[in-house]
Length: 220
Image 1 (cartoon, helix red, strand yellow):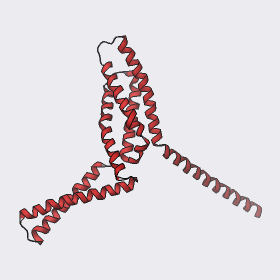
Image 2 (cartoon, one colour; image 1 turned 45 degrees about the horizontal axis):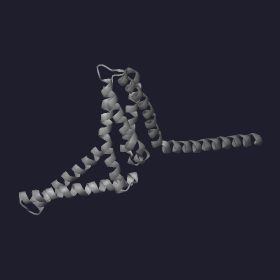
Image 3 (cartoon, one colour; image 1 turned 180 degrees about the vertical axis):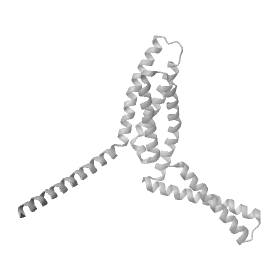
Image 4 (spheres, one colour; image 1 turned 90 degrees about the horizontal axis):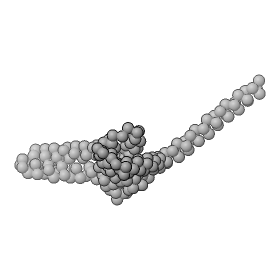
């Protein structure tokens, strides 16, 4: 869902409508400047609203979603965005070299899931565990880990908590990886199907060529 493009199209339509209505009112219908401006403002609102309705209808058809599903997904994506920002901020604030690779992987996966959902909203339903459970857990754990690891002096209890948190984050990262794989499972199945079709077509073509060659040989 390209929100910037949608906003641009709506504003562009509103401005065009406003200009056309003002010119028609002022020159064609000989209205006053003030009245023409009022009509133009109303036309801009109507133009923006109509374009928004048409855009939303187009998006619903494109993504095969109902209006309520579209609003539901958009609401949850808006709520997930600041959580992902908090997660990334916490991960980057941790100064722990041994867990650097794991933290980079977690950042990469969460961003990938979010960007895929924004691009294809219907995938949200394949990633509900991520948005409603795993993301919240990751944010809470990383923020607490970042806080404790940033302490100048650490007793055995803090060290033990940090060690346990690292193990839990590693396990949680694996679950989030599964969330990503679940999102693309249909694509994998589709690819396998297309590969089977392609292999069958290639085999049929090879068999046909062999039969043709055999026929030519027998004719000789």
